[in-house]
Image (cartoon, rainbow, N blue to C red; front, side):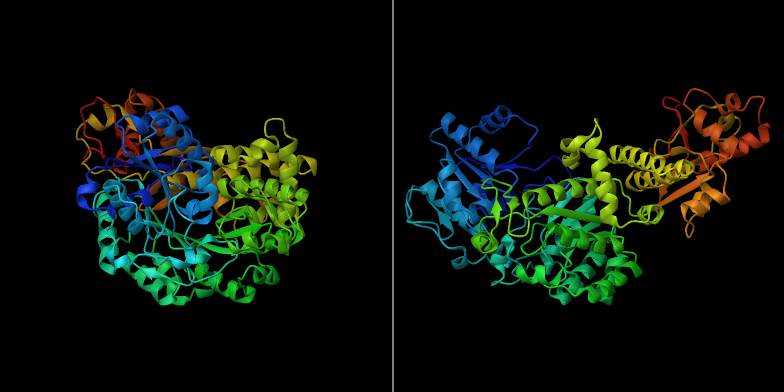
Length: 633
């Protein structure tokens, strides 16, 4: 049987990895694997493009992992596939199949739905379809044949020791500078009402063998992937397992960057220390800071303990963020805004705030009447209103959290946000409320563009920050601060862009002898940023401890140009002297230093500057010059 496993990703990104499809393929016998292909498709493709790709080499079975973000589109594709190829077997799995098997079965002509963890079930299903047998199978729902779908509580996940790795088998191939999705364990020990993972709480957390994890990490390290998203719902539970996992990362692939999900309750000094030694970011799922609200959905929180845990992360230099949900039962607009203020007081690198979704198969979806929860019947199942959440308050939250996403997260505002709150003497939620009202009123932004926060990049967010803060300062009669505020924004924008950009290696070859250094054309390294400032950038770097009013009183806008580069994982920012700035600006691959400095700089001084710039890798041999560049060396 020719099998095609199609993954419709949420977007094109480093996280667009068909892990579920890869795991299903890895569980098949070798002879079946050879006839199994994986296909990645994306929302920006038309249905006709996707259908053509699926049917280009006609399969006999097409499988789709179905998620909240792709359910409606996958259903449409499945219906059109059946029209085009009536004999085609269509199979669906994933959270939507497990949470709402009857609804999904009614929406498209599926041959079968896979419920729960699918490796074992899918392999058995392929064997049954290939042989033409008709016996029932555990974990499989055959629409039209069965009395009904099996209960998820009756299903047990496969023994992880028995599962083959799609990475080690070569079914999924990591790429240099690409990202990977990585499972170190499966399951969740917690029982949150809104979460689909709560169904696995009875099985607890199951871990993959250490030998497999180590081999996968060695592969990722050898290939040189840029980022690893660890998919464990709570990597640090039990705490000892979290410590052992971090030790494995540090001993096997310490130079990779990891994204981890953690529960603050189980952070301790040893875990924080290990995280601090690792290149990583940690997301803490709080959802709310109101104890009663959390108890309603079977979660807990001790704010005093949280503050102690966050101090451990800060002390070890760990990058961390928080998750918040608005629309939770017994919460309200004011309660959510208080949670927002509380988490931003910790100065997290990122705050992910999103609306409650009544996901099929969750306890909260089953008990919606108890809380008078009204939610959309179609994905993404977002809340519309409830006993404590009028629809208008939820819409206000959507706009305000979109403003937060653009200004704070995409705009990487954490480093300068405290200075802004001090400048305007207001709480975080009031700042974002003002930003929201301003953005909605702008003809080039408006509510629709603000809500489409995924479409904003860092440059867009930087321009919004300048526009809003400039307007705000003019409105309050503090125009004299605008230049300093814009310099502050400019510094942090270029710092972050440099940190996320390419490294600039030092020159790896000897300087050319004789007059070649002086008379040869050079070109500026593309990793360099030359950024003009109104103030002396050195003064900006000394600003810590001063508020903006004090800074403007003490310093004058004398002008400067700063050089930004990244080397050894660190950002270097230096104020440039006039002669070095001229050399770097005018080295365009056509003019030699002798021409650039003619009549303005003593040759001895000019040669010294060129030797420094070439030796530091700031200048490279011009293309076609015949000299070896540092990157080529």
